[in-house]
Image (tube, rainbow, N blue to C red; front, side, top):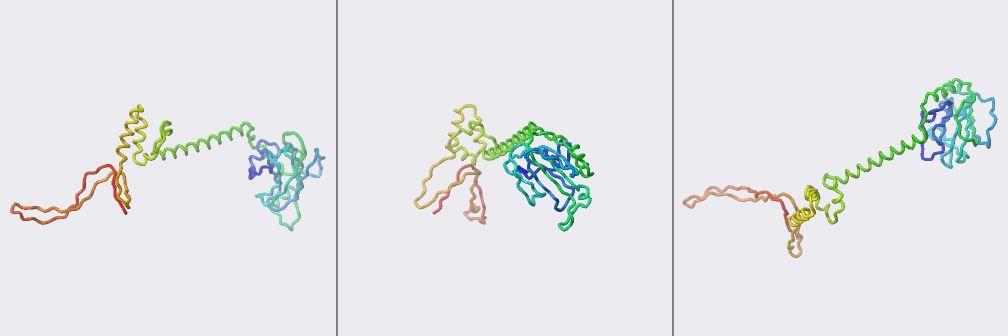
Length: 298
């Protein structure tokens, strides 16, 4: 693996479009190396050559593929990232040869403990070479035949142009989602409606008026002429602003809203002979009004 920002490809995409199994090289900057053993350690050797080395006939299964690191650091990484070994590879095109011995025996045993005899071993060789199709150099085991058949049943990987288009579409989707979030937040700031361009560009404390009457702000914005807008704004300002005389060492408070005054008293009927009837306590309210309520505190 040579991409420091990747956790590695999955099995299907590693062999997409290949004719050879065992060594999946379909994803740039990564190799998927299959073994016969499922659990336990195997014999594994990595070699870097200046040119194609001779093929040792002792190896039972051999495949080749092309590989190019995508960073200056390449490493052989154990399954689940439990361990890794750095490889001395440059950022250039390589031919890769993956050799295996004992695949079937290891596959049948499945698990090997540390004190048990080693069943399978592998050799991974690199040398500089231009890109070329993957191929099966030698097949002996049934396990290798299975993986070759698996690779040939995988769909072809996306082309560079298709990858670029997929990335572009994903970027556009992210940008659109971000724009929708921004517009939703803007609507919330402007009382549930999107402001016009002219309203966005108005100076002063426009948003301060939204707390009192957002519908009025948008109605003024929708007025047909600047004269009507100014007249409506001036009327709203006159009704919404006032001055008070605050006594010394006191603070005047104000609250705008819809109010009615509550008063307590009593009613009592007075007869013609000037005698009075029974006194009854009553609570009365003034008509509702919209405006400011003022009070003072020390």
